[in-house]
Image 1: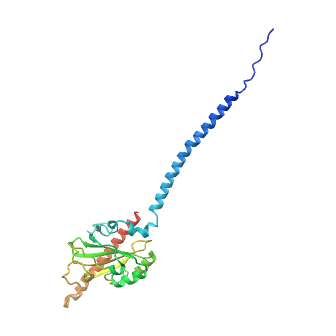
Image 2 (image 1 turned 135 degrees about the vertical axis):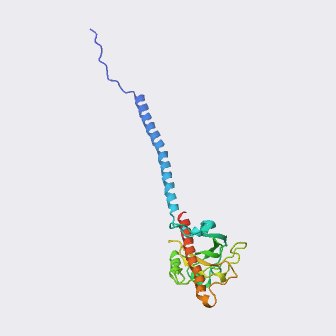
Image 3 (image 1 turned 90 degrees about the vertical axis):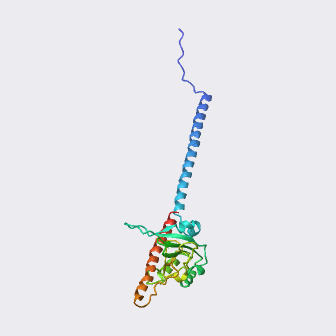
Amino acid sequence: MQTTPAPQPATPNAEGGRSGRKRRILGTLAMVFGVLPLLAAGGLVFAAVKNHRIQTGNDAFIPAAWHNLRTDEIFPDLLREPSTGGQQAPGWVRQGIAKDSDCKKALMPRLASVAVENGCTTVLRATYVDAGGEAAATVALCVLGSNDQALAIERSGLAVVADHPGPMVVPVAVPKTAAAGWRTSLGYGGGTMSPTLFGPYLAAITVGPTDPDRRYGNLPGEWKSTGQLESRVYQSLSTDLLFAFSHSFDKAVDGR
């Protein structure tokens, strides 16, 4: 009687085994090389976001802000105090912007000497008039050696909180505007203020009437006290406008 041999276990084909392993290896490599570009792209995106955050909060920008910001960002078309509720003041309208100037030429002597001692390198100035065109102001941004030096001047007797600091900036007249007759002899009010917490800047101002033919603060006889009050009005205006400029400049720097 012929018996049928029992089936033998299948022996793996050597070629088939190698092909399977090769396919698995290639599949793994394909997956790895497919994922790596995605990881790399994700890394680039993260780096870009990180760098953007560094740039927007980069303290290195602040000392160079006076040079990197546009002049109309430093001296906007309209300056007025931030609204504190209720009706906001009309503000001051820019008439013109002067070219960069030497500290000794752009500042009144008593501020110029102190500013130069504290590293002043240049001064930017712009002239504004109030909404009625009756008062003019030249606002200056002084670039000093450091913020500490700016604060040192602010804490000195030249600070705007002094009783009567007086004009600090050489006025800049702007032809064919309401400030065409604006000059040093009309400067009755002024002061200084540090406009940022970290920058090497000092804001300074001179304020006075636009009418060159009108004598202020020097009335005769019984009107003498009235004349003094008249001149003090410009000191009050200088304080308000200096604060408005400092707030505006700080906002422009912080926004970059």
